[in-house]
Amino acid sequence: MWARKVGASIICGHDYLSMFPGVIEAVDEFGGPAKLVDSLWLLGPAGDARGVRKIV
Image (cartoon, rainbow, N blue to C red):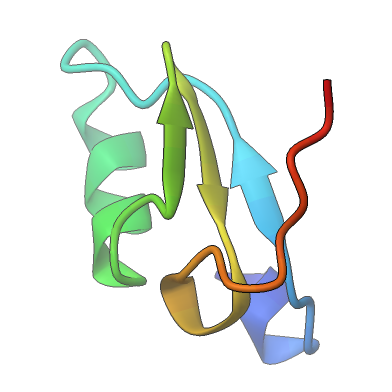
C-alpha cells in the first residue's frame, strides 16, 4: 500500500468482505486488520492496534 510507503501510521478502509477478495488480500498482506467492524478495517502501526484510541 502506498500509505505505508509514505509513512502513514494508521490506514483504514471498507469492503473487507468475501465479495471483494482483492481488498482482503491487500489488507492481509500487511498483517490483517487490527480492528474489524462489519466491513470496515483498520491497520495500526506495523499492522496492530497499539496506540489506536476507540472513537465513538
